Length: 239
Ligand SMILES: [Zn+2]
Image (cartoon, rainbow, N blue to C red):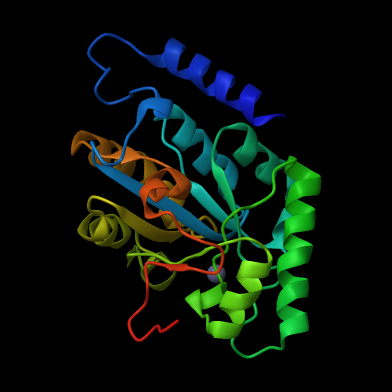
């Protein structure tokens, strides 16, 4: 499906779900300007995870967009979820094929991890990821150079839900709300059941606080990132 068709579809969905009084909570996503309104980008790593279908239902119901940093191996085993993510207007990023720490493997292996994932995502969804999130958020200058070869900036996160650690719905909600601020990029995982279970209430709370849930690319539009750049810049990072 082309991007154009996908956006027409998204507008149609907004049009039929808009009801009087809900206008401020569900604006047309194309008009969200994150320099003017409060935005948060929820990001889900390592998927498509087992519970992605349920998560996609929740996101659709609340007109929220997310970014999925996918592992090629799971795009291969769960292609229908990856396809749905693209069709329903979410952003797909590259999170390697099998999740090695890029700072401990050679350049050929890094290139292969990235390329294989670009290929399978393109093959399954028709979309080519434009953002790289290195596994564990681990990068160095070599990883940056290789990301640049692929034309991709590297996206880390401003705060984490610590969902993989707590595996507790209340703790995930509390931690996510604590780190979700204007311009935040929040790290979550769609293989954690409690994360997916917490999403209806979490999204409602964030939207009631005035946040628009947008993709990473929408959120960072103003950053003018170049291929190989890293955002947010981690402490001690020198270029
Ligand atoms: Zn990961």
